[in-house]
Amino acid sequence: MTDAPSHLFYQARAPRPFLSHGEGIYLYDESGKRYIDGSSGAMVSNIGHSNPRVLAKMKVQMDRATFGYRLHFRTHPSEDLAAKLAGLMPGDLDRVFFVSGGSEAVETAEKLARQYAVTQGQGSRWKVISRTPAYHGGTLGALALTGGKLFAGPFAEMFQEMPHVRAPQTYLDRDNLTEEERGLKYADELRERIEAEGPASVLAFIMEPVGGASTGALVAPDSYYTRIREICDDYGVLLIYDEVMSGAGRTGTFLACEHWGVTPDIVAMSKGLGAGYAPLGAVAARSHMVEALLDAGGFLHGFTYAGNPLACAAGLAVLEEMEEQDILGNCTRMGAVLMDRLQGLMARYPFIGHVRGKGLLTAFEMVSDRETMAPLPKEWNAHSELVELAYDAGLILYSRRTRGGVEGDHFLVCPPLIVTEAQIDEILQILTGALDTFAARHGLDVSGEVSA
Image 1 (cartoon, rainbow, N blue to C red):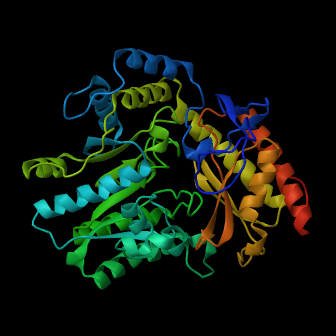
Image 2: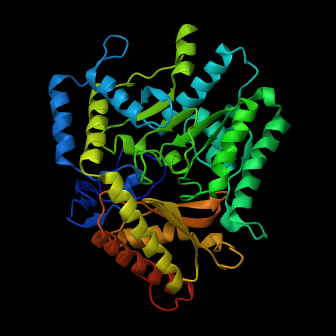
Image 3: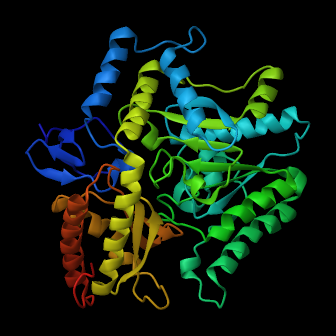
């Protein structure tokens, strides 16, 4: 049936085989070919595929009820998951709103911020500053935060684009500053932007603590994070962390913000929270913000599947599995192994210009010159070619272009958090073969052995 016409459509015509089943870090097509899920889908499948304990707990809930509308019933899975999440959140982020995905989570976060400001007599605040490049979702509200021609495309006229500051891509800088000084320099651009926009008009600043697809696992200098928090506090600007990709353990802590001891005012998360077992996301906020909305008549927002009992049962089972199997510990240990292996590739491939990330949210970027960090010729379409070479060899990677979305090829290597060292070596073996083929096709130098 693989050759039959399809009535299904997504972004493009990209023929792929039918999925048969998944097990652990592996996926199998209907011909029996095995693929290593080296990107956890789209950084979703944090605990691997077809976990029997998670499936069993979902079955228990399926036998009870698969749907109960939030205006008609409270459900134990949604209440229990909210309590569990509140206990995992830093600081006083102890109120939770459930959604079905990352774009919904970001929309919820910005609408919550706006309605809270209105309750505080600050109706002039509506601008949400974000970074560029960035990606915050595909709905119109999230696209307004994302900005840029690549994602906005024909929809730009349909939303109010928000102001931006530069993402802290310090690895591209060629100056005499230390990394700490660079971090402060990029953070201070937020202060300048707030002043330029008019402080009374700025509602919030949204950022990914560890970059996702748009910046390829970008990690800012440590100095950046505390300075950003200070600037937001100085101006009464709410700090929103988009942890849709970095949250739920992907970087080795439950939320990436924990690495720097910074507590945002609102957190949006998804992907690894449901881990591919059910569509699930969440927004966490401080109690006083939520109480202000409820006192003013309620949160003017909602989704049909918010708090769906089956999705929440899946999310709770995922979190229990993470605790019982010490998956965060494994992520930290295997993240160090993967980072070491990826950095080792730089000795063999001069066209790998940078390796970055935290935990098992890692990436490498290709360049034509490591000294200047000039990108590869964009007409090579390296971001798609290497992915196809790896896919044909049984390794799934995730790629994007970092610089304006038109050049600067980077590749996310983000296997499930249950990955072993032997499986990381298997990933690197296939990746090395794909890189060798790519280099030969384009006449790129390959020197020495892969450094262990």
